[in-house]
Length: 337
Image (cartoon, rainbow, N blue to C red; front, side, top):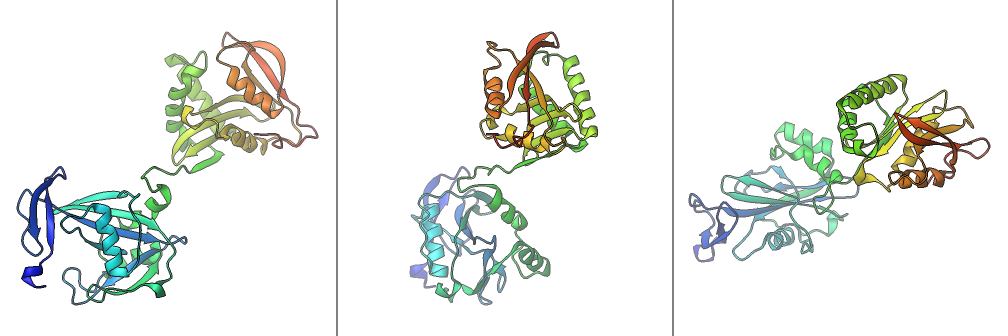
């Protein structure tokens, strides 16, 4: 590159504020100053990553395979502008990243490196590779990328294997994508069960003491061993619990995390419970009596499934009412909302 046309970079403070000073590419970055780099990781709908091989004569990581695109922001570039420009220069691909934010930022000795994760199915034949930078490109799945890294032909980003997991676990704004699972609990779920119980204990009379929580812990362990504890989880975090008695067809406990209500989790847990019951078996549950301010949502939920009010009673000294669902001939789950 001609010295009169050397690439210039903006310099930043450690708090990522522009200093107003420019830096010439190739010169050592002054101590206490930092520059901005960007990488774009393009995935297709098959969860394959577009990777590029750097030219053998290119400075830095010669002939190595890299993620889709990477480079430095030039003076005046915002992060997204730099990412768009690098994609265009290296691949001949126009991307509009104006509404995107970096998925994550890595610090390195000279600055900040913003990583963008994009999903787009691309016909590789339509790309125009920058011959000074890029030797070739191809799609690769997670196993291929990890194998290449182990063979020493892929740049050894320490987080490379996590890119594939991140891409499927977070949305474009960096928010975790819920991955709800419904199943039967094992003892490995116990600690998360107890953490969940502390969140919802105020919704259940009689659960506000240490002794009551210990009894609840014992109850959970009993049901887990009996195979009668159903859970809903987002990842590893328990967000719903249903404990039941198989022979009696009785719901002993049912609760959903406050932040996950109105997502039909209770209905899904009831369906899973039903797989352990005899065909057409009657199901009962004790819940709040009519007029109890704590019970309007619970009563409405059970009524929506076809439960009908039954006998009045007491539970832990608290007035309750039995609700009954007669499944004979109606096919349990058909009316579940």
